[in-house]
Length: 361
Image (cartoon, rainbow, N blue to C red; front, top):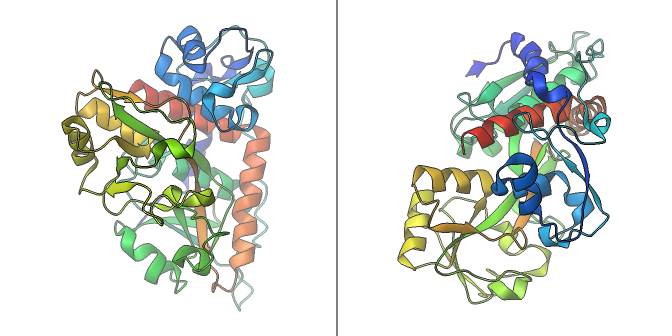
């Protein structure tokens, strides 16, 4: 297992581009505005409607089309844009990162007086969220590093990379061989408390929330204003991917056979089935889907349904309920996350990663 060095933590705090101090800001919705129009105006790229929406979900609600005249939204800083807006101070980043507090060493205590490090677990091949080839190990990796540094000091934890995701929950975390793992989706535990992750793991606050979108063939658009619009459709998502969002909040699309889910081996297979007309839409998080469209050179053939996301899924840190320090571990990561959101470091990380992600799409 390979471990990130402590020097990484300094890099975390310095990774935002220099322009992050002056771009971004607030914008008041005018009559006739759409999010794609706002993105085109301020970023010169209508595709970035999803970035604007993602930054304002709590303000706009469950549909990007629900913006209202007079509503004020925040435009994130992406590749130095936009500039010249009011309210920059509200999203400005600190010129110098706040100094991490002296480690309290409350994170994990051994029987001896010396404190033990918290051992976190992740893996590659989940870009842009976790991957050692991605910027600073990926978006969620960098957030976790910053949160843990804030709450425990950079000597209070280690991150281990084990490239066998199937071994993470069981046995590595379930047997407390390592303490916490990331990034994991949280199923609908209220509706399905006996689901394996719900029954056996506790979840942190979301490190990041991603949009899950529907990708359709431009010649065969589909309407998605409400859940009933998808009944009878055939969706595609690769084998091994999560499916809980297809049943959550009373949808029961799969549980009640309301839709057909096709699960080939790869994302590329899904888009091939879409082009053949075998499926009505591909259901993926926006970054995986957009990257596939680019890699497959299908930009002129594939549209993204903009009326609403299929779901918004949080990426969490998890800890086994059987871990003797489960509550304390969650308190550590959650308190660190809260602090980096308050001091601006969190948004600094988001802006840096969004700039890189969009420059590659």
